[in-house]
Length: 171
Image 1 (tube, rainbow, N blue to C red):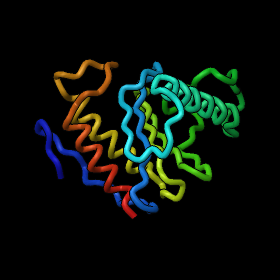
Image 2 (image 1 turned 45 degrees about the vertical axis):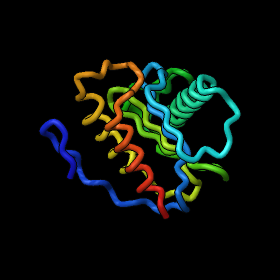
Image 3 (image 1 turned 30 degrees about the vertical axis):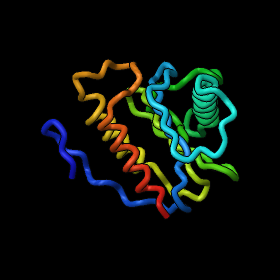
Image 4 (image 1 turned 180 degrees about the vertical axis):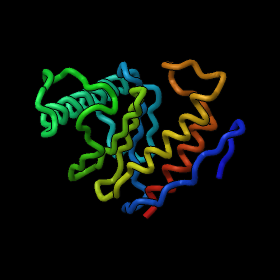
């Protein structure tokens, strides 16, 4: 177990199945769509500048969340498509897969969004995203040097994230 500031980070979850070292990208957005962190490990092709890339990714998440909320079979009253649900409310998605990548997603109750893009054959990453969230809380949120809503520039978090992501995508 790792300790930071007198608290404890839970042990890493089991390693999901993957095919080689194929984590491509990680995004962390706040509730307003500001990209707080972007990390790239094995991105095969870059076609957009980072600002365009971040806007497209957040727009994709917004659209998928709206669509899943609109299609939720358990709620009779449906809001307008495009009106976001409060974090943790209604139907949500955890991942989707294409023939070239898998996007795994987790949103916290405070609206922070964690997105990890990996090889399409990577297994379920929900527990891994929760672990990354715990790293974020311990190393970023609890840091007296961090100002909420600002880009994450915490070397301890970045190093821990890099080590962890490399460990979960080894096959």
